[in-house]
Amino acid sequence: MDACSHLKEQYDTCFNTWFTQKFLKGDYDDEMCAPLLKVYTQCVKKAMKEEKLDFKEFEEDILGTEKEYKPPPPK
Image (tube, rainbow, N blue to C red):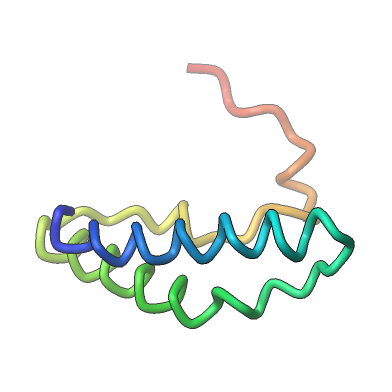
């Protein structure tokens, strides 16, 4: 997913700035980097589709649900 590398770098830079200059000082509003995350996520999804990778389980919301607290199934 090299096609998305530059977008990841932009998002990482924004996130690090937000984390150190905002979050650690008590400002938890994470909207600052949301547009970059959206573009990066779209790029990754497109690249996954082009590579015929389908990871629907990664898109499923688990946090705050019953599944969050259940142990993974045995292998």
